[in-house]
Length: 295
Ligand SMILES: NC(=O)c1ccc[n+]([C@@H]2O[C@H](COP(=O)([O-])OP(=O)(O)OC[C@H]3O[C@@H](n4cnc5c(N)ncnc54)[C@H](O)[C@@H]3O)[C@@H](O)[C@H]2O)c1
Image 1 (cartoon, protein in one colour):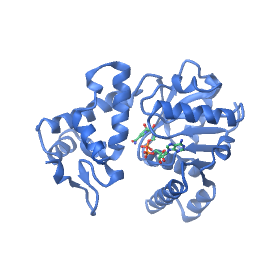
Image 2 (spheres, protein in one colour):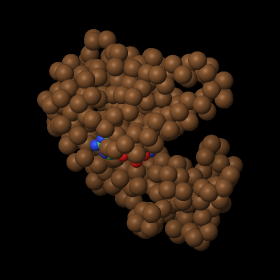
Image 3 (cartoon, rainbow, N blue to C red):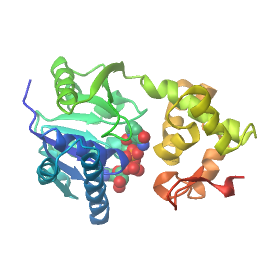
């Protein structure tokens, strides 16, 4: 098994910036590739913010934070990201975009480089098929917020080699996460169970079963979940949830995975959840407030 020293993260949004955080705290020299300078700046700010949060919680010293920040660079050039030992992709949940990116990276990366997708629901096999390295292709599915959530699903597809699988386990162990192995089946373990629940919460709201506040309070106080399902939808990002639901629905043709009409209406209206400042809640003040526009 080749030794991992340099990690590249493609995409520095919600998930990519979190993966950068755990990679640099884990001691890896890391490069994050984004599509423009403004996106690089935003990703850099997100990483600095989350490292400071970890420091405030006593998980990192100021020296460890500074050392971690010295291990990362943010680039727009794909070539400088492609030379890493492991490349983790966390761009938008769109198979055509992921395949186009992988096929471009495949032309630039050394043969030994291992590719990993953080997809929530798209086929690992289909992404691997866009490259000439099906044996060095795997899924590494992190959870949000990445620095906090312990789990990583390791998704082995039909072409993945034993050494790639072992390398993925080694990476997950070294960044202090706990791995579960799953098959390359849309949604893997966690989203297979979680996504129908989130979509059901939206349908319950859509059908007037309860208000945003009451549905979320019902589940936090009545079922003991740490965050209500509608708050969780906002946290995941309504656009991302919609893409995940679409891809699971197209794989299983099961109505449990079909995105509710309200979700589409919210997205076209620019309600993407936390990242746009509004969704089922509004995120202007100190505490999120149920979005009055949602009725
Ligand atoms: N949001 C979640 O809770 C969650 C959890 C697990 C996995 N995921 C998966 O992680 C991936 C990213 O999701 P996210 O929530 O971080 O989305 P996001 O919208 O926050 O970030 C995506 C980022 O990718 C960038 N990007 C787009 N094309 C790119 C390219 N060609 N090269 C480099 N950067 C590019 C965008 O500029 C954006 O910053 C998706 O596949 C999603 O399904 C999301």
